[in-house]
Image 1: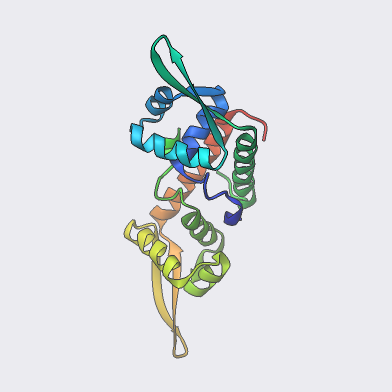
Image 2 (image 1 turned 60 degrees about the horizontal axis):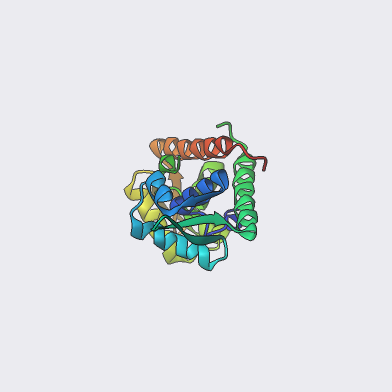
Length: 99
Length: 99
């Protein structure tokens, strides 16, 4: 049962990032950082892992002269995250205890 | 939301250990190890963390001359684990997506 829980996604910080991106579609780095209460370095590290796995993609742009980076789930990443959430739901169901 | 997920318990291996102990009441080291497909060292490390936090307790005994160690959840540990599972359930509910 545990083995079905995607080890890369079964991490609190990554769960936070992916949940926000799933809800909001796309978000810039600072909004993600502030919503999750992370440091720049910590967020960047997790985003890099997610990018390397093809779960998250980013786009760099400018607002006036200010650079801004937007992150969003890839199609494959969304599918993988939804699959993780389903496995989590099934895990809770199969426990058969009243919560 | 993520912050409510107990960081000590939001770990696949510990989730596996605690789920088995919740279901089975108590289990010996070898059964836990074999059910979870862990090495002795890996299981021992996680059990130590759980013991140090007062989540799991153990009892050493003998079957004939063979030593055997049984593990079970403490009352406090069971409460903490159930609370983690409730938070997980609430997290999934509050996502408001059809899984």
